[in-house]
Structures are given as structure tokens and as C-alpha cells.
Image (cartoon, rainbow, N blue to C red; front, side):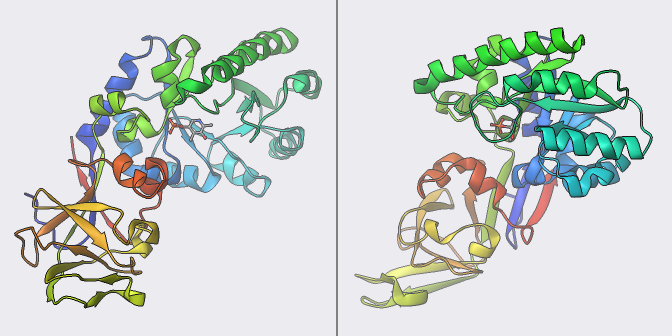
Length: 369
Ligand SMILES: *Cc1c(COP(=O)(O)O)cnc(C)c1O
């Protein structure tokens, strides 16, 4: 057992490699693989994750915002980086760091084109995002003519790819909707190539899309959550390995009598003699108050211990009455042995939110491949 003397987020690069290979095995050998490493690589550590994926020959990275791409470039990442949500205030930065924006509206296209022209760039790599039903970011099909006119006889921009994003690829009840998104994207792709007389890469799948709609893989697929070990499906989860494990250690153990309370606002009151352990992490570390008051278990020496009372900013208390344990013993919140998906479910949320919420205060420890 690794020696844990504080709260740590363990990042297992062996698991990352396994997941990368598993997801790639679902795609044709010629389909490019884009790894989504936004939000600190889903709350882990974008630099370590990206460096590992670069050695595994990933084709592309995506981040949400320009500054996330800057961090990767400053760490020496050379692979192309797509910026999913570029903002005009950062267009200079995007170009200076050779990041590739996903242009999603007339305003964004024109503003980016202006900055590229001012910097006298030619053939600057960009991507065009289409809205096929998520109604978040993206041009509509009817904007193709505008895009064609705007870029006609201009050599500042080079369209590397066109993309769209699925709204419910993990939900089998929404299959008809997802297929309609794919159909629309197909139409858009054909019309786009014809009107602009180019043949950029096409991509629409995220992790659950790779699993459920592999026929729509086009030239590239984008995976985030799957790389970290979660596939929005129990069967898929069984084949993936959890990359991050959140662990801590027992700071103190209290024996309490019947009718004593634990924590702020006295939300837990004991009915009998109980043994309570205090852990050094709280909502400031990313374990929110919704996990408190008897909803969620952690693992102490392989046994389940309930989180009791209100989660504090820096601490939580657990009930270890029936568990043999000592101060200093290791406690696992989620990851290896129990999944972040199950942990998140206890508070009606999803692995994505739990993982990306683990704060920067928690020390990251990387297990190399
Ligand atoms: C976050 C994101 C992804 C990754 O989705 P997963 O479900 O984590 O695989 C892919 N594409 C876009 C546009 C995204 O915003």
C-alpha cells in the first residue's frame, strides 16, 4: 500500500495508456484520435497526461480555452491543439502559441480573420464548428454560403476540419435524435466541401459516440472522459481503468456517546456509542456539501464508511464504528476500487463534475507507465 500521509490525487499513466489503446481499438486504424485535455485533463494534470499521450502518438489535443493551450505549449507539447471555445480577447495569444481555434459564428470568424491578417499570417489552421442540435456553439447549415463568401480568394486561413458535437451520445433513448444530428452533419459536410471546394477532416464523436456510433467516426474522434476511465456505461467502465484515485488519511478518531453531534450545525447526532474519523479534505478540495449527511461512502481498509454531518471546507467526518482502523490509515474516496461515477451518483451528479472539481490544493502524484 502506498504511503499516504496527506490528501493526494494519484494519476496512473498505465491506466491512461490502457484506455487510449482500448478507445483506439474501437476505431479504424486510419481514424485520427483527438484527446480532450480541457479543465486540467478532467481534473487530473493536463501536462503529464498530454506528455504521455504525445509519446503514444495521439494526433490532436483539444482544450476549452486558450490559456489551457498556452500551458501545454509552455510545457513543450508540439502536437496540434484545438481550442474549442476561443474568445476574441485571446486571439493574439492563440496565434502566438500556434493554437487552432474552433470558429463557431460569423462574429468569431470575422474577428479571427482580422487578427490573422494584421499579423500577416498565411494558411493559419482553423476549424469550423457546426451546430447540429446541441444549441451551444456552432454555425448553422445555412451559414455555409457566408463562410464560403468570407473566405473566397483569401489565403489567411486554412480549414483543417469541420466538426459538430453530439447532445446525447450516451443515451440510448435518444438514438433517433443522435442519428438526426449525424445525418445533418453529413449533409453539412457534403455541402461545405462542395461550396468551398476543399476537403477538410470531419469529426463529431465524443467518447460515448465512439462506443455507440462508430459508423460516424469520419476522419477523427474526440475523447475526453473515456481516456480517464469512464464511458457513461457500466459495461464500458468495466473495460476501462480509472486514471485518478483520490486518497487521504485519517487525521483523528473520536469515540462519541449517544446524543452527541458531529460537525457544523450539528447535522449528525449519534444514536449510540460511535467511532468517528476526521479526514483532511473538504468542499474546498472538491468534495462538495452534497456528499455529506449520510449519502456517500468512502473506503477505509476495504470497508465502506459513510460521510456523516456537513462537509466542512477542509475536513469531512466519517463513521468507522464497525471498521478496524487507526489514525494515519489510508482512506480512498474514489478511483481504483470504487468509481468516481458511483461516488458522483450518490449526489445526483456525474463523473465529469466530480473529477473536474478536484481543486488545485490537492497534491497530484503521477504513477509512470
Ligand atoms: C468536452 C468535449 C468533448 C469530450 O467529450 P467526452 O464525453 O468527455 O468524451 C468532445 N468534444 C467537445 C466539443 C467537447 O466540448
